[in-house]
Picture: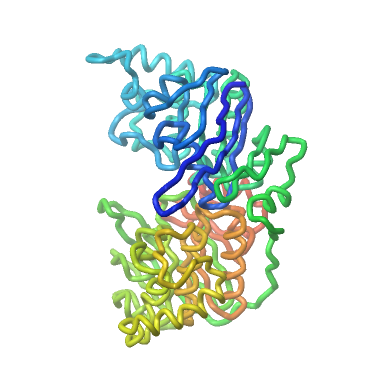
Length: 496
């Protein structure tokens, strides 16, 4: 056995048990997937293995030898590497320079010729196709992820932890990544794969261990894997993986965007002449890899970012230069991608977050009334919280998202902007978000869905556009048969 975690216990302040006597093992040359809801304990367990957290109880064995991992550097010296969701690369450095950063071999002077030669050898061996001399800022998101994997291969890691590795990749990049993973495991390396996407889990896994509330629900071998069974183990109930989308005839035009231009936070062009229309009772999906203008588009429409040029009309009225508050009053709701940093005030209570944007101003100053009225929303949206005064930051990601949706939907919006609304959520929470957006659409609201997950786009969109570097590459029907076509457009190939 390559790795064994025995009876791992990790407790956090407030009586939270993140890992409750967890047992997990990894064999040489296998992909062992960790599945579970938000807050199930997956990342905590891997942070313990990678030396970011200290466990309270338990034992870790590497090839039968007990080890005490004290830091990420110690973990790497033992052959344990981790590719986290947020890359740890220096954009202005080359690929070779980034990889050399973590090498103890070179203390004062780095032999970049030797490093580059070794990178080329590894890149060719695992079909990663990365130029050692390329600057990281010039690389696509998929290529940057390959650099992170190259770092671990260069360090000869025998255990590789991949945390949500496909979250920001095109379908073609996912396929390329999976080819590399299969080649890596053939060399004897053990891969721990963390993902919420059941289709990918079914494709790449040799075994799957499901965690729930910090405990192991069970481990399944490849021949036992079934999407519905896995979803049931994760959530504790049957989950409908495909929600029903009733046919609906779109109504009058709600939003018209004309030749919209905008700059990003660095002052560079983020939107380059975007134009489209949206109607009542439709979900318009815009697909694209994160960082291609989706956030800027959402912020410009909502009023958080000023356009450099172009026009925005809501129900025939020019709102291009109106304030955020004016747009809220006119019926625009926004579900941002960053639910902790932008969508909510984590240190406030659940009740206070539910009424942050309530139009009846007096309720904002009457906390007793806010708490009383919040009970109805908590029940209606199935928000799991001990009480309305409970700090929002202590809820799971899925329940925080329910708070955001409850607040945005209860103000009777005409237009809902949903930016990556299910990123980081488990299948149970995803099902809730899908049903909520479809219900809004069936009630005649216009929904702008900005997402990188094509399964999400196919599930609930009525129309789909693809965005790349701030431009619309083309329009397609939300049909899985268009997967390759959409994937190419997400990589910058314009639809003829």
